[in-house]
Image 1 (cartoon, rainbow, N blue to C red):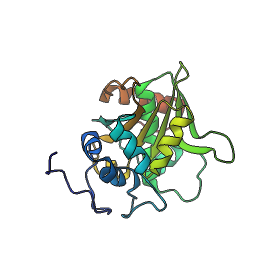
Image 2: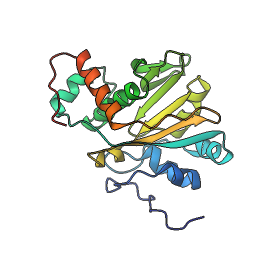
Image 3: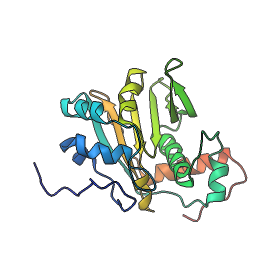
Length: 220
């Protein structure tokens, strides 16, 4: 095993890199603690546990791949809140809402025909789980998008509820103004997502704006 992996043990806002899928596969117990639970202001999400998905990744029942797209639109905060116009559950930072916008763009870029359901609930009450975005493909396949920090146990539970893929977009991904970064978790045997091109995200961005008439087109 390589011993030159970046040190992601410190949970702090100074973390500027997103652990790669390769690094997660090599040491899921260590890397998932950063990949999934690092918060915006530094620190670790409380009452979070990553042991279950880590075991599943080691056993090969859950697979993880990188999501990396070389384009993200520059959107002012005031416009951002109009673009991502949905209920806020508790306090929500501009950064979390920006990741929600990225989730919508990725969902439309991956499958333009998907039906998007923000803040969707999966499972039966009272244990239903809310996801930041649910994309329903024409075939009925479900892709859940989670933004910011997430309890690792939720990944396993979403698979139990019939989700095909879970795309996680971490706060650390916002440190790069030119890329959208994250990971896609899926059950073994699920087909991989085709690489997402910058042009497909630009098209998704135009589509989103067409659906929300009156918002300015970004400069890039």
